[in-house]
Length: 102
Image (cartoon, rainbow, N blue to C red):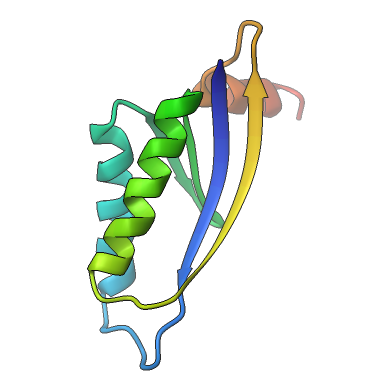
């Protein structure tokens, strides 16, 4: 089964993050998902991740652990899940279908 998640992770910090920390942090999260063999797409409200269901959720658990391991003691995470057992579209195909309907 293929799952697509739309993910937003917000570190709840006691002090402001250092300048430039967020782009580095997002890049690190993206690399973790991609190193697990998952497709990613970063957008203004977070990140979309697609792959086999178990792999997506194992990678999500690893990402959340790594955020905590980096020193962030509290995070707020929002996840929207789509699962399909038929012939799912890739993230790029979904974007193309929506773009074509303009």
